[in-house]
Image 1 (tube, rainbow, N blue to C red):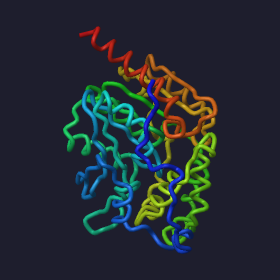
Image 2: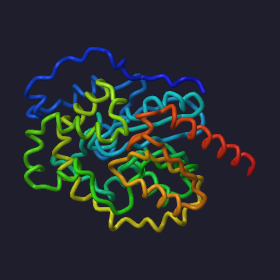
Image 3: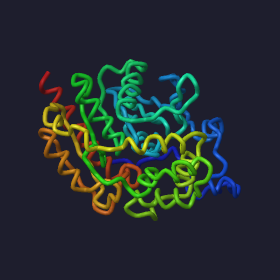
Image 4: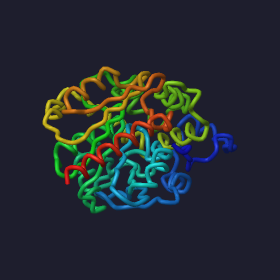
Length: 322
């Protein structure tokens, strides 16, 4: 396979220093600045539930929609998308309240709580707005939950399903997310949250933190410090209780599925990979030694080998059945 190109700046590029107020999280990064710094050549915006939702739509062919996880952004797919857009139409978006998109707000300006029902309304509306009637869904973490939940609710609209370290089963929240279940943290975080905490959290999702470059780390920090994001996370985290999520419905799915998981995932137990693979009929699974919670960002060349094989095999099977 050809080497995977990257749309991200070189890791060695000098980064401008952040002010003390910015490093302490006393100052938030304005949405306009995030939009200026982190939109890409293919960036577009669509109004969903009153928000300008940032997405990238590239390539042509069968449609793939990629959905990132908690506190991430569409940029986590950069290198995988660069490869897949050669043969597919690849769409990826910044889920609210993250990335360039930021929080959803009510007509009065109050930040909306992003629970599962709200994400359902949001993602359904996004798919309708872009006129996507059928697609392969690839979701990581929270994005995996949104993906398989959509596949269950819209069975004819999902051609293939790829779950990468997906959420859905009951679990103890990672410490960096669970902090927001504390009232003092929820109250103080919009006004004070040192970037050192964010750096530690991002390094924690990599199996090998040495693979994390400075440009990527800065992006995570600035998005987390984005205007309104911390307040939105404080409203969102107390709703992240997976005990009431019906995972048994996965047994009724009839869609080619691939479960991919980093063996050093410190955020969602590796045992959940087997749970997904056992519930989804005929699902295939791949475990990546040494990789963490976001293997497609940490080692895209390894993930692409299996993703390409899966997409090719399922496409050939579909053609055989026609």
